[in-house]
Image (cartoon, one colour):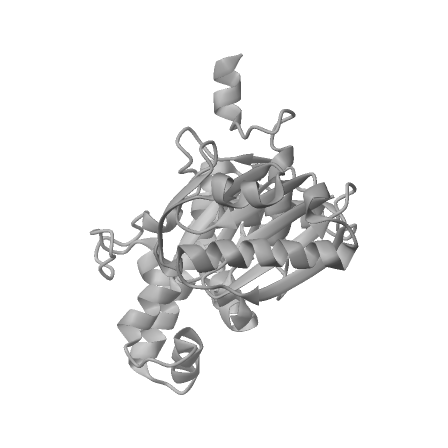
Length: 320
């Protein structure tokens, strides 16, 4: 039995996964701030899962961690996880020593992509998908690719970092220094900053204000729809994925988000026979609210290669 832990900015989600891929226990709790609080939070939630399934934590075959920030899965290290107050952390040493089991780490969005693929494969009603592009819509925008159950990271692990592709050179300024990036249009953090009214759920507030006719809010909402539609086009045009799975906090907007995205894609299809042939609207799927995709994907990281070492497909081919 394996454990997967998704360490988020506000909550940590953990699952115990049976050999057949079934989630047999799930625990969620608030994420602490700073290195020590994050490490203790992970060890405590794994111990809690062990109690839930009735076995010592040291008998889990592996522990997978999905983590924000810059992740080095080979070294087992994470840096610049600013939303957690972590500048640098050797997770393999910090967590592995506590339980004596193999530890695998991955960027949280890439782990969620792997989990989204697995959940789709386990759903009889879902059309088969050899490849998916998982698009995470949260504070930022990023994606992950999975083909035939294998996560594709690219040569240096940057595959899927589409948030900083500029799709409108005259668009809003992005923190990366460009203008009109997908994340500047569709990232929750960028929208909240441009809205400037605070609030617990600023993007929802933008939609409410747009429904009431506020011109600034209508402009922000239109930009969000345009940014997400652009991201869908990028994922399909770059990798011709079978399905684009949407996840992340902004998907809680439901049809208020999807209707505008579908309209954007339909409008571009009307103008371009080529885009119309790609049937982009038919390729979109959305994770269910509260989905355990990220934690499940983290649990599956140990299956990336037969020997437990994570190697992307390009590197495996290089090694022959």
